[in-house]
Amino acid sequence: MPLYDCMLLLKPHVKQEALMDLVAKVGKHIYRKDGVLTDLKSFGTVQLGYGIKKLDGRYYQGKLMQMTVMTPPSFNIELHYLNKEDRLLRWLLVKHRDIKLGLDFLGEDDAKAELSKFRSNIYESEEEEEEDDDESEK
Image (cartoon, rainbow, N blue to C red; front, side):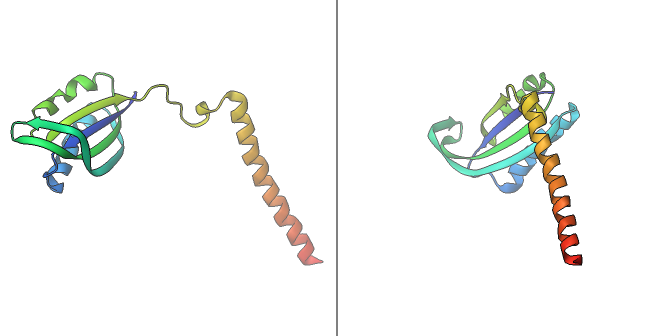
C-alpha cells in the first residue's frame, strides 16, 4: 500500500475536542479500508498566505494537522466526504513517491558496507572488554 500525507486545515476557532473528533473520524475511515495511520502531527495555528472565504467569513489563520497513512490507492476518492465538513477550510492528500525504507534506501554494495561496520564494531567492543579483563588479572 502506498504512503500518503493527509493535510487538514481547520478553522482557527475550532476547539481541541472537535479537532480530535474529526481526526478520529478520518482515522476510523482509514482503518475500515484496511489502512494504517503511521504518524499524526499538529502544527498548531498557522498564518495563511491569503484569506480563505467560507460562508461564515474569511479566514487568515487555520489549525494545520498532518496525518501520514498507508492506504489503498482508492482512498482518495473516499475522502471527498470531507468537502461537506464545516470545520475544515481545506484538505489535501499527497502521495509519497519513490520512498525506499531500510536497506532499500542504500544500494546493495552500500548496504553490505553499512552492515559490516555494525558487525565489526560489535566484535571490536567485545575484544576490547576481553583485553581489559586480561590486563586487570595481571
